[in-house]
Amino acid sequence: MRGRNGLNTTNTIVSILVMVGVLIALFWVARTVFQLLTLAAPIFLIITLVMDHKVVLNYGKWLWQLLRNNTLMGIIATILTIFGFPVVCFFLFGRAILRRKIKRMEEAYQQEQFGEIAEYEIISEEEEAAELELPPLEKDVIPENGDEYERLFE
Image 1 (cartoon, rainbow, N blue to C red):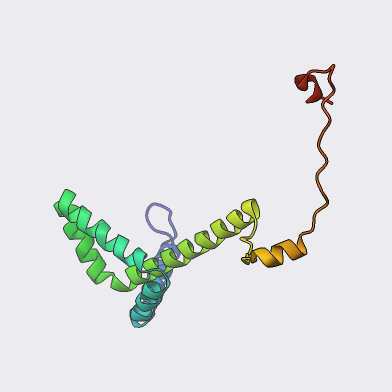
Image 2: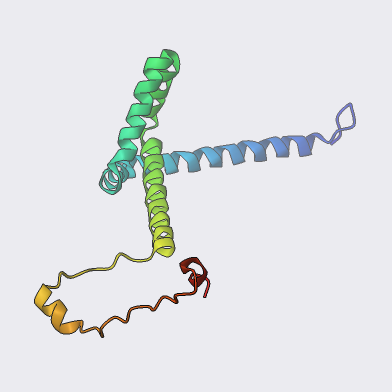
């Protein structure tokens, strides 16, 4: 069926219905994900606090500084934090995991660069003398005609 301007109205109506169906499906998926995050948010928050409590403290400090420096944006961020609590908890959980992974990578790099810290044991003087019998030292003979400076290059 063709309209006055030569467009096929059937294809247009079908396209609009498909677009509305896709939007409804996306809304349903987003709502389901948000509901699952709502159920898991306390668990994420507790795990985050156990893994690295500084992540949550730093987020709170950031909100406080935002409230002090830019009150309007601080209020908006606080309201979004309250309503988006599940998403914020998931974000903080991800941040804690990322910080933990970075710490492990830094430790591995430090170990690779400087090696492992060796355990040591204090040895008493008696054991030291018994185990470490060294031959007597021989004194270097300084040639009478040579300079000590020249001897360094030999």
